[in-house]
Image (cartoon, rainbow, N blue to C red):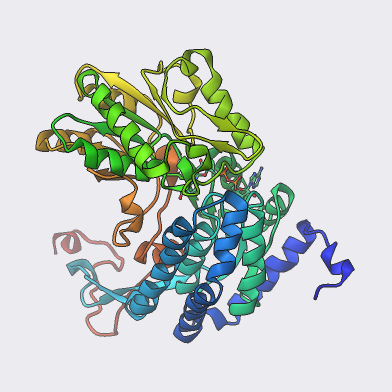
Length: 468
Ligand code: NAD
């Protein structure tokens, strides 16, 4: 039990300095480098998830009214899957990779050593507060680092569960948790880290990168953006609709970094698509979605007002074709579809990050590419089509962190592909082996012996040597 004085201790720059030094010291001791340490920590995470499933689900319910199934599938199971994969593959990931040498260096051999970076800082966001904290942490552990996690203050119950459970299950001299908001994060950002892994919006991403630049610290920035969905004609509209609905409202009620932000379809398809969306939304969430237990609430009143402001812009509110209801007291907004919103409206200018889904129409589907390219590069882009040529054109002309053809959000669950943004949607990536790599330095090592000491590169330089 913490004493009253300890509870009131402020986490300031001085405290952050002590913590960073402690982590650097523990890393320097070599403790976190061993295979055994890494495996034991990863196994403890699985144990923690199993023994505290209820506490974690309950925290997510308090923070976001997150439905139990979403908490188990998208947070707990994903974390356990990441651990299981790392446990299974760690020996292979840690092994030196043989590399080819050239005639120039003959005789020699070479390899790449995966070296832990040191003491790293992980700053996570509120929307998947357990997954977004634990998934990078798993990468940092697998790679053999010491670390501090700063969960989001906007998901306080999840932050406090992490602060309570991690020291119980993990080596608390090498893995620390600091709870707090801007001032605590700023104090941490003043310190020298060997890597900063940040998840959140681009405005704070810039603050993180500027702080990192002072120490030449590399960063991974997992940011967001407006992820488009292009819907072509000639597809199975019901299947496409269900996949859009589940990617949008079935992922934290649209408060997910890769949830569909807007749809682009042709004028001919729009009506059919809207009808299908309405039908599936009613089948999934009933006639009064504000009361559905299968939809998360909006995280707080600030985000609630931000979303209602987007919806209440005059030229936008006239375009609502489904939903629009809200319940301010309970921070709920119903799934809302808008058809034909102008591109210069607020809702088309910023990442929506909520349950509103605008649909834009174009005369021919290829015109959608220009609309996407007129904005910043999104974190994800989705295309529904049976047309091979359109798929190829889409992949060639649309730059995005990740792409899924004929579904939404699924790339998140494929651990053999990197997850991350490009341009304003972020830099660096993780998941699976990419998480290990994100927290690893690839050290090049070339081996020579004392045999075959070619004299070509030794002075005096003569023309004869050049001709060799
Ligand atoms: P947030 O408010 O939880 O902020 C993220 C972190 O930044 C928190 O830990 C917070 O304490 C810290 N922070 C906030 N202001 C700060 C400041 N001034 N200085 C230092 N630290 C500060 O989360 P958010 O930014 O609202 O998250 C939503 C955004 O994150 C969306 O843009 C979304 O797309 C993106 N996101 C990306 C991913 C991804 O994996 N790429 C995942 C989730 C969310």
